[in-house]
Length: 232
Image (tube, helix red, strand yellow):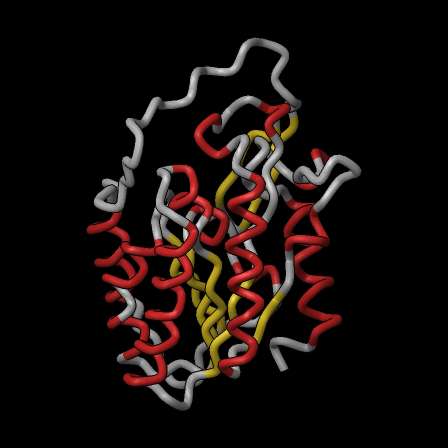
């Protein structure tokens, strides 16, 4: 087992599981878990408020994929602030956006929705919430440039996140809706195709556990951003 370091945090990098994966949660027909909020949410929000966003800042907003990375270090840009909370949903992001909007940041990069998919939130509701985020930012901070990142694929071979597996069609549908935001003058960062293997799964060499990127995965992120000039 190797170790990777993102900022000051060290994570274990594992190889794909060889034992049986834990079973996925069984949801009743029509069940949508929109009320879940990670236990760390209050502490995370308190920490965010202690380091407020300003008008010269660039914000990366999302879930654990965002929270696990030191974006300022990754891009060598001290003006970048991370606003990721592990396990968060689009509903949670909507609830905590006011702190970001109040600072009138220069840019906001949003990557959120994979945990909604894992909790059976319909694609149309995720799309609706994404559009609400756009409307909320434009109403409270019209000068902020909005960027939406497409969701990353997942890799079921690792067996660690069963509720995220077997839902590739939902990832594709949500990403298609994200790309349509371009018609509303939202900037799109299409990460998804850059992480695919030959079976349309998340490349094993780019991830820790079939869901979260490793150092190599975040370097792909850097290349995509450099090519697109998104931080200029």
